[in-house]
Amino acid sequence: MPNIIQEKTFAILENENKDLMIMIKSHSLNPATDPEIIYDGKTHAILFRDNDTTIILDYISEDMRDKIFNSDKILITEYEKDNSKKSDAIIINEYYANIVKVKKVPLNENNIITIEDIKESEDIKTELKKYFE
Image (cartoon, rainbow, N blue to C red; front, top):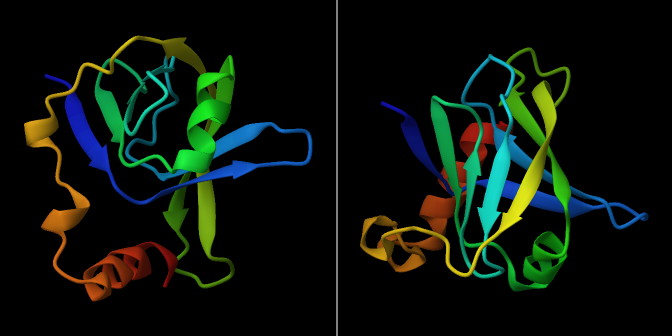
């Protein structure tokens, strides 16, 4: 059965050439296999990383939605916290994921933890510190 992960901590970056990169915490040491992002231009996207791992990219910022939807592919960079403190993170995997445009992302909104479900902003800071301390 595939591992389905709701990714709440990720970053979408754009370089001067308008290329996009999504940085996510690594969920596998194995290389991605035919990765695809299913996206409708709205709040959520689904990254089918491989046959074993599906990642829900949760609450995509409004300023990135059209940019992602209008892309053919996006660089995905998976990282882990660097415990040696030589840097903030170690890159584990990098790969391109094709964007598959759909009318509606096939998600049951009732199963997604919303921002309202998170108690206070301190909880968000605590969650982010896990990745960057």
